[in-house]
Image (cartoon, rainbow, N blue to C red; front, side):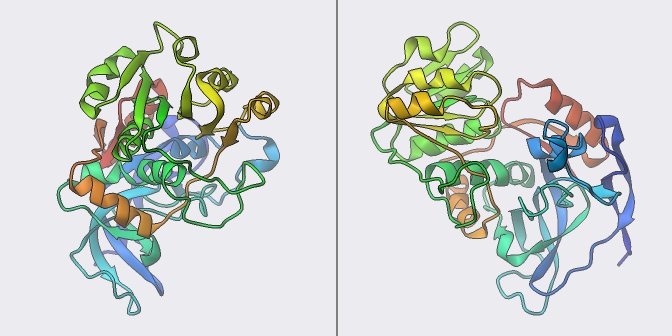
Length: 338
């Protein structure tokens, strides 16, 4: 077996042009680990943030990594080797995972490569009915949706608030998903619907047909009308957009409702929420193979499907990041490894 592989590495922070497709050392596994031959890797917002050096964060929070590093967290592939103490996986198994997140949030989790080492505790068997591209697009989005809506699944401190995030009942409740067409949003829509929620999807007009396929009760084109102007009685709003003026979403909720923020940075409506008895909550997604296995059953039976916006060869990761930076993404972007 060769000691090298192809990978996309950073030697400096910057725009998509700093992503370099080149030879890199093939990883060696240790106790409790599995070597995965990557067939596809997902592209997620943290990949872009790390590539850029997390410049949006205060200087004291920014990473101080040792270059070169390999970014990316989501993979689907085939087991190439297993450590002697690993019993749940065997050579040839098809698997998928979100790797070392958020543990390696600031230094890269090595997914943009031909091979990656993965802790067996983070790895799950790939749903048999979906291909590697769709499986690679699933882990971060699926686990985010699961941990916000179904079960947190860990007791790690919450970086965004003092208390753990607690999901709320969904069956029969009106749930508004803002940013319903995006990588996390389209999974949130389907997962909420699978739990019996009455789902209102907010996205641009190009997503309407897809949302109708998912069976949403109502679709709102935000380019024509703001959701807070037409919905005022929701039980839960989950915002997958972030950015400025998230406070306006409080007007969509009935008193005693809940507002879940996938990216809460910049939200300033806590006082207004308290006055109306509205819970505002967030959490940071964490790797969890048990949840990936459980949620994977919904991928396998078609209850949830991963929509692919586009796919690029691993060697064209810079183009994939350029596409991601342009926005208006429907579903997920993936890198294919041949």
